[in-house]
Amino acid sequence: MSGAGLSIRGIGKSFFGVPVLTDVSLEIRPGRVLGLVGQNGAGKSTLMNIVGGNTAPDSGDMLLDDKAYGPANAREAERSGVAFIHQELNLFANLSIAENIFITAMPRGPAGLIDRNRLRRRATDLLREVDLDLSPDTLVEQLSPGERQLVEVSKALQLDARIVIFDEPTTSLTPRETSRLFALIDRLRSGGTAVVYISHILADIETLADDVAVLRDGKLVAAGPRPDFPASRMINLMLGRDIDQLYPPHRSAVRDEVLLEAEGLSLPGVVKGIDLSLRQGEILGLFGLMGSGRTELARLLFGLDRFHSGELVVQGERVTRMTPRRAIAARMAFITENRREEGLMMNVSIAENIALASLRALGNALGLLDKRAITASAATFASALQVRSGPIDTQPARSLSGGNQQKVVIAKWLMSGPSIFLLDEPTRGIDVAAKYEIYSIVKDLVAAGSGVIFISSEIEEVMAMADRILVMRQGEIASAFARERFSKASILRAAFGEKEAAA
Image (cartoon, rainbow, N blue to C red):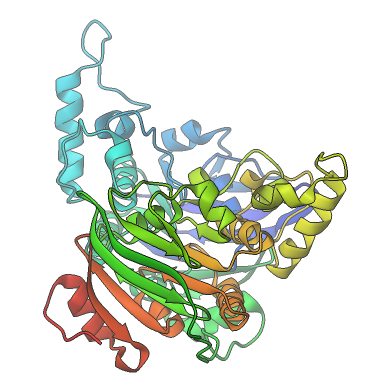
């Protein structure tokens, strides 16, 4: 990329009467990586959506290489050389990898028909660049979240973009996939491309960024060279205050009563012979690499998928066939890692989303839903989780930032009053302050006698939160660790298949 880069001048934006950006000015320069950080709702994604043509500013303007720039839509931004890889991936699950990569630029033959051979060849070359060893004819619905992320990166590469925006790109990636992504970003930077990297993982910002910009409450509070922004300063600028610790103090609340047991739980090709127990007041950590079976096990426990053999014992009741309806009746909650497709109804209000798992308790004397009661009850939980929004009875969930959407998912289940929580990546895409709030809520839940299965791909997080950790590998429980035996090296060795004595 040659030229002066992108100059953002005095940008302002409001949604539902709530200011999201106020007078933001920023420079995005060729051949450099800008780390963009801030709490959920700080305005990071909104600012980049303006750059990427997905929304228009209310005030301010932009210059691209010293020429006026104001894309009317994402396609116009792409034609100007701006590629935006969103946190919530924009892929068509029923189309192939190749079709998704070239969805707006299908190679065509002389008669105007799609040239399938050229499509496959070009897609294969791009997949090779991101080190994704898959056929370009593979349907996207068959891919893991990490593989889908790399397909999105391939889409940006085919555009030969001058500016590439990454919004929380590593949340679904394995360590190996993250390393490949970082190498790709280095190549883009070396080739003169400007990169904007939005992330709550401050270690990634420290590793990648040349420059840092910090947003707080829709305003730019600081910007400059990355060496001027150690993680501690970034956190303090994001929050507007000092923060002493990332995790609440650990105090064991484990009791004798068993809330949930799995005995020989198996689903061919997915999980095999799973034995586990969850006690009152316990946080049971579940760790493993992508594809180890963590999420698949949670889905079986909640009845979203049906296990072929084995049994569950839920609060003393033996279950040979679990369903979501039965799980909810047994006071179980499942916070999915895929909030957009499985956790929320994106086009309905925040209040209605929060009330989804509690509708039976919110009817009036005639059995009809009491909208006023729904809004009042939902408001209590939205406030407790500090959901940043406009009026919750009218604002749709799709309009929230990713982190605030996750808070709504958590509020939905908290409102239903369960005693067994299955939390699959509950802090994915959430800022440090919101993470601490969620950690504190989890600690309060177990102190009150609930049991929590806490699934995380962040080893430091699961070690800080759990009373015990089960490590999964290839669909089986490879090792178990009591808290006094926690060791990052030991847990990782178990995840990678190296021998380690279990607790």
